[in-house]
Image 1 (tube, rainbow, N blue to C red):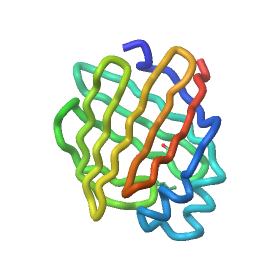
Image 2 (image 1 turned 90 degrees about the horizontal axis):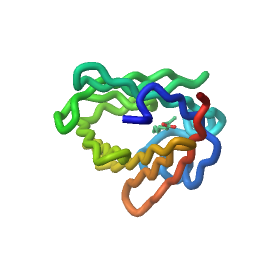
Image 3 (image 1 turned 90 degrees about the vertical axis):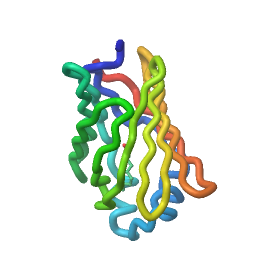
Image 4 (image 1 turned 60 degrees about the horizontal axis):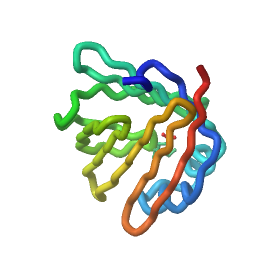
Length: 131
Ligand code: DKA
């Protein structure tokens, strides 16, 4: 996969505050979440994927196999059951917890676009490639 090992840094974000609010994230964490530009990197080794999301607020690392449910702790501390699948350069990430969240990430040679949905909120975050 061409996006493996590339670093993508947040460059624009829409409706992220509404998204976090719908997930019950408190004001202070929302302010910190809004202030940082995380860097996302996906690597793969023998079918095991690692996705690292790094920022001065929090570093998160999840490990998963495509289509297999795993336990995830989100950067704001929710414990969810997640499944990630891949179709070409499009990654679909379903998180089941108190609420169900859908995160679709599309990787291209220049950027990664994440569309994050919860309730009727659609948050769009675009990350630009760093290397
Ligand atoms: C990102 O990957 C953001 C990930 C969203 C996490 C949900 C709420 C976090 C609150 C700081 O850029």
